[in-house]
Amino acid sequence: MADNKAQLVIEGAEAIELPILTGTVGPDVIDVRSLTSTGRFTFDPGFMSTASCESKITYIDGDKGILLHRGYPIEQLAEKSDYLETCYLLLNGELPTTEQKAKFVDTIKNHTIVHEQLKSFLHGFRRDAHPMAVMCGIVGALSAFYHDSLDINNPQHREISAHRLVAKMPTIAAMVYKYSMGQPLMYPRNDLNYSENFLHMMFNTPAEIKPISPVLAKAMDRIFILHADHEQNASTSTVRLAGSTGANPFACIAAGIAALWGPAHGGANEAVLTMLDEIGDVSNVEKFLAKAKDKNDPFKLMGFGHRVYKNFDPRAKVMKQTCDEVLGELGINDPQLDLAMKLEEIALNDPYFAERNLYPNVDFYSGIILKAIGIPTSMFTVIFALARTVGWISHWKEMIASGQKIGRPRQLYTGHPKRDLPR
Image (cartoon, rainbow, N blue to C red; front, side):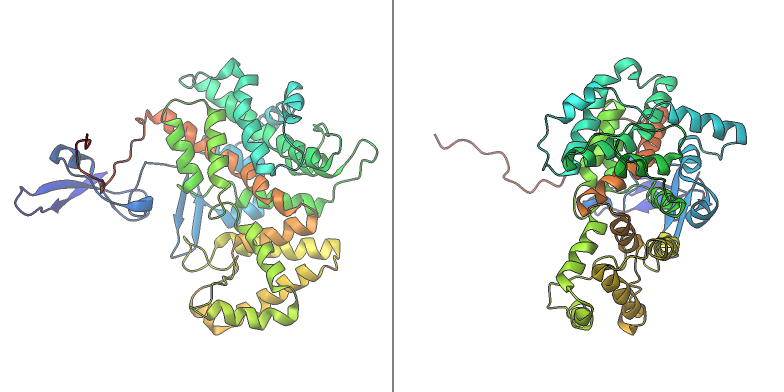
């Protein structure tokens, strides 16, 4: 893996040789671990130039618009796979056989019900609390209800915890929503698939059980797949850092949820709807596009472009198709959705945005789809957390299995040197 070496020359000191590591794909990486012996460290705020770990799970090439899960392009998984098969792939490294898939699906279905006492725990929250606050608390508390398999050094315990988390997140998400609405909680049904079951628990009541639209279930499944993992982002890195201390998996996933809650990370699709509210009407689109082009104007066009993808977001193409299918199925007459479609049309044909690769991203379309399905804006990040749980727990499992040491970032100290109290 380390075929070449880089040389670091420090004035007045001996040159240091640093190994150059080569991955399967992607840029070479300079191994700076030996710098500690010189008493020096690298300075990289935000870790933009630092690989914090070795991973075999997900690969992104932002310049080329590539996203691979275990080597498989995200577009192929979204078109030809389903969420639970993608979960199996992320967790285990390979696609399941027919028998393995059936067993995995059955295992997940058998873990969807949560402990009855969690209802009492839920009632401790105010009904107007933000859903992410409630979800973060409930997931963190799962270790108090499922403490029979928390030995992180036991591979079987790690697998059981992973299955429980993937299975119970839709139930918890739906519980959070129902509680905020003052509606009775709905139990999961083992005769439905993963996405159908989530929609059932979200929108049905004991008084009326409606059939689940296959188009909407497929749309939810794609949203789950397209958000399942995204390499070493802020929340995944948080899960890994928490996990490096030996914390239990439920606490680690709760930490990931807390990180995802930040508006710069998981709140992007919610920000799209807020932006549409600000624009207000189709007649205002041209004016706000002009504001977006003005460097001196604070207005930002949310849902266009991406920090990682400098060309296009490969997930957005699939999501646009899904968006068209959902809007066609529901036949919704919603001024905000009409506004979103008009904004997309004008921006895609505007040279300013095309030259800067500011194409609609996955958040633009997912926000529109979730609103059309009837999911409130405050629940958008909860859906994101639900989908991303499998990525988080896959990285956690990989890290524990590799025996990674506790994370301990260094700092560049710029405060006072040692000084004495003036008395």
